[in-house]
Image 1 (tube, rainbow, N blue to C red):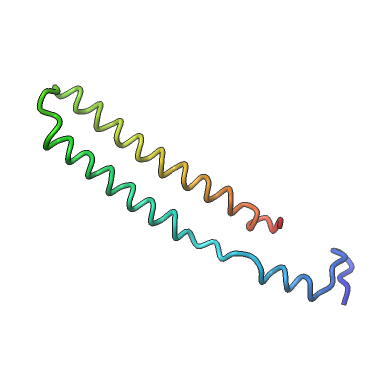
Image 2 (cartoon, helix red, strand yellow):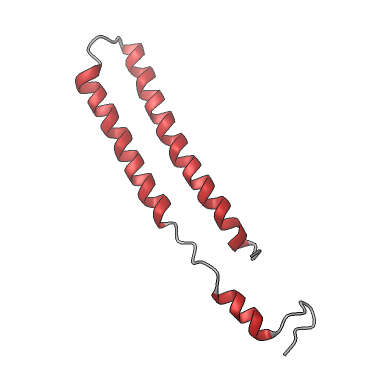
Length: 93
């Protein structure tokens, strides 16, 4: 049967609904967890092995830079994932 408002047949509408992705963010969640763990491991190795010749200010700068880079990588990854999900959200195929 033809839908008056969209000009599509009803069976085409049901087919469009079935072909969309679920949108569960498995990869971004895993990358977020791994990114946080890698950032913490880098801070731990820095504190144990590499910070011998640095003063307190330089240690704080390295800590902030590590946290910033980790947050930037995780944020960009979620941004890319969200951008890919936008077409599913608006139903634009």
